[in-house]
Length: 116
Image 1 (tube, rainbow, N blue to C red):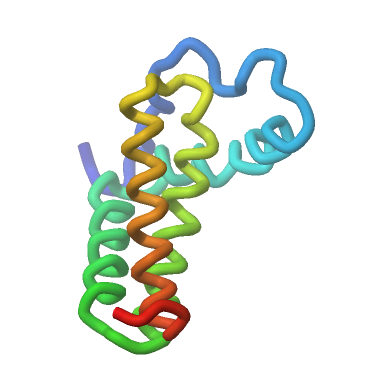
Image 2: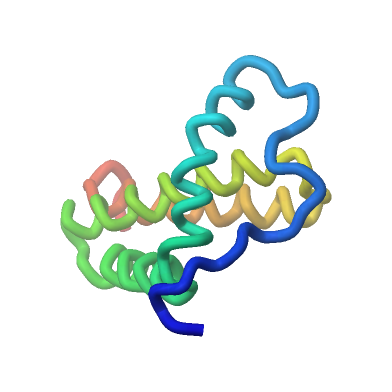
């Protein structure tokens, strides 16, 4: 497949959470276009590579620039965790909580809010 070819959307039972209301419904609706773009227009290797580069920057740079990189990673993983939360089991939910806490702590140390 050429890099400019569009990929189909991932298979699944449904795109939106059934019976969602309020905040979840709004976030899911506003996330539909970015998610569709991310899964169909961006090469598969780009999001993980960008996240790894940002996380390595956050871990290697011990100043606010590292904190900004950590905040970008934190925003992305929080967004994905929020969207996937209803379909996750207990273990997967715990893993996401640990990831969010870890990246939040990295960001806090980079901004000097917590001593390293």
